[in-house]
Image (tube, rainbow, N blue to C red):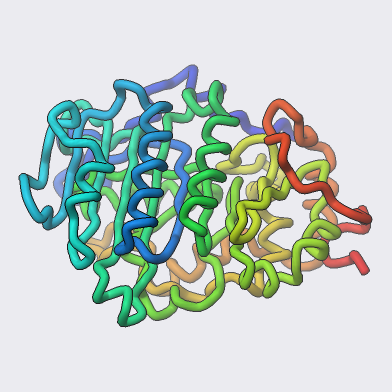
Amino acid sequence: MSEPFDLAAELEKMPFALEIPGHLLMKGGRQDYIGAALCIRGTLYFKDAHTVPVREELGRCFNDYQRLAGPELRWLWREEPPEGSALTPYNKARSLIEMLATMKENDHLSFYYTGGREAVDASPWFFELFGQRGWEAKMGDDLSVLEFSVPILFFEEHRLDFLRLFLDCAARLKAEQGYAGYALNLSVTKRDGNEATEAYMSESMPGLDAGLAPLLANRPEFQKNKIKTVSWLTVLNKPRLESAGGLKALQARLPDSHFAFYDYGAGVIIQAGNEPSVIGDADFPRPPAYVLLNHELKELRYETVGDLHGGSHDGEVRLTGWSADQWLKRFDVPLSELSAYQHKLSEQPALSSQYTLKDRLRAQGYTSSGPGNAP
C-alpha cells in the first residue's frame, strides 16, 4: 500500500519550493522577483459588498485575519482608489474599516494586502477584497470575493484557527459558495507572467486551486446556483445544499469518519479530511476524499466558467477553453472506480477532534453503504 504524500513534511526539507521565480515558464526566462507562492487559501463569494452592514463585516474579517498574520503584511495594493495611491506600505495605510467607512456605494472595492519582501513579490500571506459597485450590484452583477491565505507551515500549527476564520467569515458574509485548500498566490501586479506556472503545477497537483476569483465572479456562467470546485473546505449555501439533495442525504453518503459538516447560518461548510490534500499517491493520484465529495456534488458543478487564465503569448500552457473545462472535471472518475476510492479513504486517518471544530453537525442515521449506494 502506498503511503500518503505529506507535502508539509516534504516542504520542511526543501523550503525553497514554497516560492517560485517570476516569469519562470515564459519566453525569455525567469525574472528577479517571486512570481508564485504556495499556500493554503480560502475563497468566499458573497453579495451586497456595496452596503454598509456588509462592509462592516468585511472589516471584522480582516481584523481577525490580521491577528493571525501579525507583522507579516507589508504592502497594500488598490485598483482605482478614490483617494491616495495604488500602492501603500502596510505600516502607513489606514485601517481597512476606516477606509471602507469613507467609501461611497459606487466606489470600487479593491484591496490586496500582501507580505512580499518587495511590493511585486507573491506571498503566502495574502488578503484580498474585491467588491462590486452599487450600480453593478443593482443590475445583477452582485457577486464579490473575499480571499485570504497563510503559509503551509504556519497552517500546520494553526489549522483550527484557519478553519474558524473561514467559518466565521462565511457566516458574516452569508457566503453563496466557496472553498479552501492548496493554492498558488501569484504576483498581484504580474499575474499574467505567472499563470503558466499555475497551469503547469495544476497538471500534477489536482488539489491546487486555479483561476482568478474576481475575474470569474460575474461571468454569466457563474450566476447559476452551482459551484466551481470541491476542496478541503467546500461552501454550499441553502439553495445549493438543497440542489445537492439536502444535508441529511449528503451526511448519509459521506462517512462522518472523514467528513465534517458545519452550519454557518446561510448554509453548510463541508470539511474533507483532517487537512488539505494537493495530490494522492502513486496508485490514487487524486485525493480520495475530494473524489468522493466531487461525486456527490458533480451535478452541482459548473460545466464551464470560461477561461481560467488569459491567452497564451508564446505557446506556454494556460487553462483556457477545453483545458479550463477539464480542470473543473479533474476529480471525476468512472463509477466502476468509486468503490476503490472509498476503500482507499477508509485506510486514511479518520477525522480527529484535534483538527475539527466542536460545533460540527452530527449525522442522524448515517449509513456506511458508500457513495451513490445509500437509500
